[in-house]
Length: 411
Image (tube, rainbow, N blue to C red; front, top):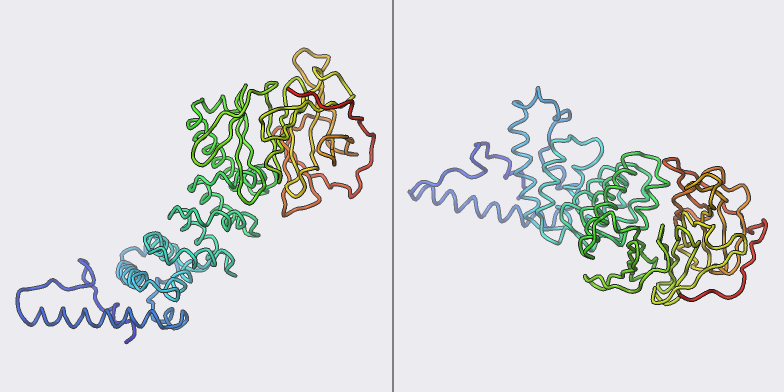
């Protein structure tokens, strides 16, 4: 029995006729119920292409308001068929519905399918996650959107990967989904998108999601959003998140935030990498600090270039693939009161033991953000005010070495 039988009812009150109190009508209802059961059973075993041929689709151009009256019945029929496919709870039926999300399919049809998939059983989730790699970008974007609408936390990793998609709309929907999921594990990727994403809408979505996370975390810690200076997530299989206020370091364990230590100086930025115990702290007046024990104690990183009170580390990032590689934007006090002069971008390949100035790196103005993307190895990204830049890292960093003076000072 083909599921086209579900398309035959056209009354506005629903797919079933009103039940009257007589044997004929009761018998009719019983027959219809059997037919529907048989049709749904057929959906479970029919291939997706065959199911697609049975689904009455909405004509192209259905988004036009002038066609609203003419399309009421096709849309109603399509919605009934969509609900029947969802009720079948089969991978094949879900895959058919995903075909309605292709780029060239009508928007009215797409809205119906998105809503139906949002209310589908958990069996749809693996299908949606697989569809994030579908050949059609409309299917990929729609699948990301539904995963966010359903608050599917198990899809965080695949959604994060989808933020690297070649199509901007897929990246946008993946970022929005991560924001809906409160997926703090994706914070490193959101920070990258704020700097190295070329499409404004995607950048803004990443910024919005990050600020929402920041506000929620501040509330959980018990401080205002403005008091939460920075947050950082380790690039590990089981990510650890840290947050700093003007004076303290906090770490999240499970769903609870715990005070770790008091900071040695007022922070500007926090950075972690693949080593969960290694943390870097960029400060306003004392340069750079690091911790080798998850923030329990801090040691000052000496540069031998200026006295510590003359240096400001305006940005810091750790290579997500190699925690021994660290990059900082360095500035010093200007002759003008309250101003800073940029000194350029410096690199260390031994966890802050020695530093070199990256040749031809941005140094005219102060860099306030540094990020690295594991999908774009060989590049360092930064932000000067609202202007992003990209720097190609040399395979062997030359330049004037800045000697590391003495042993780190513990605080």
